Image (tube, rainbow, N blue to C red; front, side, top):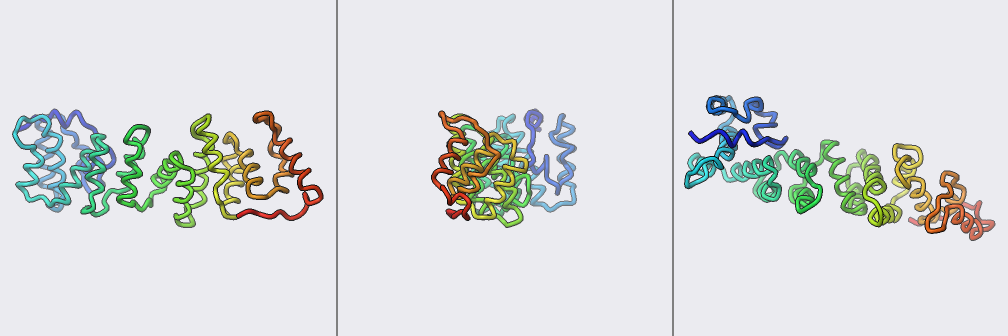
Length: 297
């Protein structure tokens, strides 16, 4: 029998069919620590009241763990799949899950986004990719997987993480993605975009993201969400929250609202304060400062 050592050195993520699947009862048996544990796990799988294709998947996964510790000419898992006539779709899917659990993310995405596969565990896979999407080539893989597979994002925690991930890459891209989501999701997702724009990064990049936020083509309802979030909601403590509201009022032609906004103070930016800006608005508007504003949409 091949050594069980390889299975001891690995840990599974939520995507693992052994370590996480709610359709199996093998999580507490994996990974096997001794040869007798491995034999017991094999017996549990082969005698379980589950369909044969699922048994094939579980045994294939175990053999993928064992293959690195053997010195045979052919990989154990591939030989098993061939000998048992394992369907190619299952073979591809299990190769992807095994690579994902070993944090071989590029390989995992190549397998799991294969067009022959039916969508399975898509949100769990995306969640795992998002967790590791911090710098390097792996950062792009979550977006590539999403576009290839189109997970429905039914779980709020995954949906929120994905929008935050998009917003870190591009505030504008994240905003238009949120625009396409169902109505009952949009307000919370808009707030995530705003929080990311004002709360992430520093220096030149932070300023550029703030400018993107100010320039977003919000409709009247979205404008109300953003103002309420930044003035009265959880976003009021974000750095630059009231400045953003003021800048958007000016950018969209709501000069009277900007002129009478008492929330912004005299902070100085390159020798210019909001008091100076409002004084310029007052002089420019003259007697029109109390008229109904026009709005740029």
